[in-house]
Figure 1 (cartoon, one colour):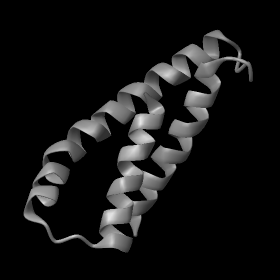
Figure 2 (cartoon, rainbow, N blue to C red):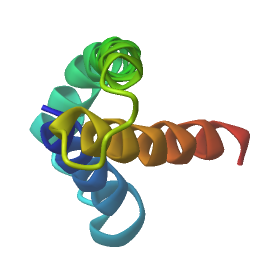
Figure 3 (cartoon, rainbow, N blue to C red):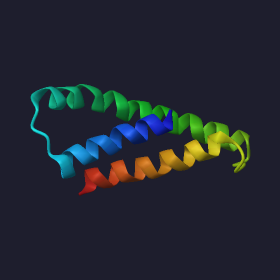
Length: 83
């Protein structure tokens, strides 16, 4: 699930800074899905922290890698708001 969130925000970044598409339907879809995806990322981040602490941050568990991906994603999202 964290890869889906990462893919969404990667596509959002590419459209905003690289592709710069002006199609109305793409803008509407982005506006409708951005806030739910932000809430979804926060939800996933909370549960990845919870499961990582239960697994003692084992590198072999998928919860650690989900935590790592979501940590990078949350850092980038917060950095984009500060810009």
